[in-house]
Length: 101
Length: 228
Image (cartoon, rainbow over all chains, first blue to last red; front, side, top):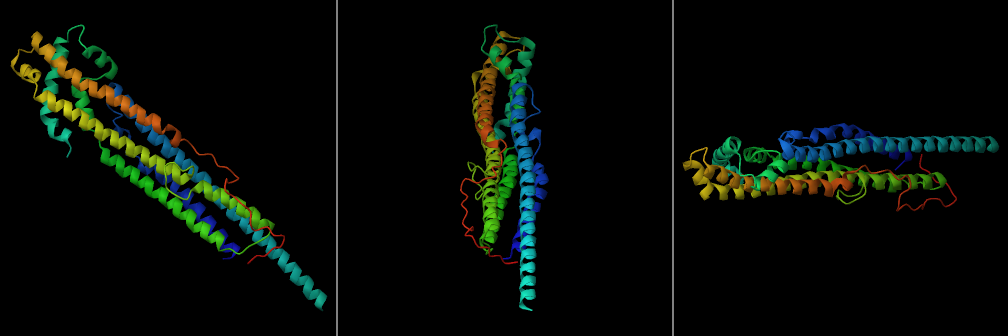
């Protein structure tokens, strides 16, 4: 596989990861499903359980967005490296052609 | 349909009487229902309604959606690892990238296992947490169903039907049934708090480590070889 192709794969993965981050909150059935709307300690327990869940989903979304950006950065680094090598290769060929004349 | 669903209807009728008698007549001053009422902060009828409203299947479905996403992360990592391995590239830049990829791949995670210190692992832990909450809800419903079924066949339930509402016999009977129901709410609230506590660490944010634990540079051999 060529470096440019690897960079594309990395960039695609990063974009998918970041795009999916927002969808994680869709998995929350709501506080009432945890009993958060009940009176007394029943409701307090429901709110505690739901806060753990919704808080965890928010953290997972943040992690996914951050790591998606890291993968895209990694793709950029690969692209830059490939460009640099291409430049070095082109100037080496050019020198070789001049010396051969 | 679980046991609580079977006893819910007659249970509602019984606990409505219990609540009404407790509200109208109270209970003896030294009755154990008082500390339970203070700790639970709700009447026996409220407990039944709350537990009837639990929907563990909805939580399991929510967890499954998150678990599928965790598996997607692991698959994505496997695909990328195969792409990195298939790139024939050596030299200093290749070695630097290999180290970077090791850290990126390790953080993404190779398996959707709840104990794995990776993003896939944290997602799996999040799914397992809500599975645990759903399991607690089922246990709590079974626990309450047992107490309500027992109360429905008790002498106290008969007395609540035949005694005059303002009588002392009714007050003691209502308090006795109330204790059985509120004790479920008390111990099950404690069990739920333990579930929340047990998972707290595994749901926390996972910091990214720029240098992977398992990274090993194998592409820096002094020559540069690159497919452009």
